Length: 309
Image (cartoon, rainbow, N blue to C red; front, top):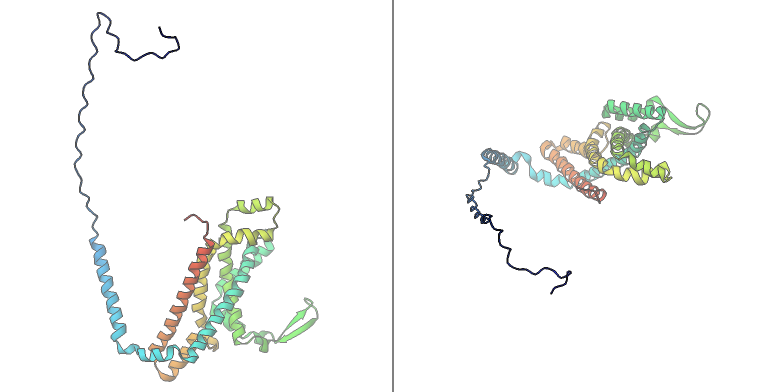
């Protein structure tokens, strides 16, 4: 005798009640149809190979011409590539690039935040500066600063519209190198301001709202929160501007400053070897631009830490 709580024991199924038809057995399943094996055929690109072959032929012909054409005068190129006058000219070019970039971007950051200011006066002044310096050609700006002494014999510092306490002779204060740095920096600041402004606008406004809710001062918000995030958008365009400025320093040759292109012109003006001396300047520009591009890569990688790619 089993208790009511014991589980039922397994046994044969109960017989069908009398007068009922026996249950039919389930029909066997039909075998699955065989899937034919498909042959994978790679997509062919015949015209791509034609383009590769044609490009390879053009590159090979160009390289062959560089090696075999005596007009390039590679011996003259090798003699002047590391000449003392050329190396000094490269150093002058680097100085112009460094000072123009440092002063230009420092002023550009200030102009960018002036344009983003809620003060219509500050925003209008910044807009006018950017509009003016982007409209006037760089060579005109350089010549204007080079001839500043024609307009102002001396510069005075003192009470506005009142007596001056300290004065400087403009002729001795603004020389050729100073005028070149001033012109390049002020010209660069107009473009740097727009680059920085675009980077700041790319940062979500919720970042500054959260910082303001925490009581962080606005200057610290810009320095520690907004600019580090904006750098990811600023760096590519800023690097392009620095490289353009580096190559654009050749325009100061109109002021008889001994930068790379001017010095090369002086040398081939004496010996008549125009092509190899131009190649000297070209290779120096390529090497230094490549170094700036490598530096840009590592700086971008630094500011891209923690960003989803």
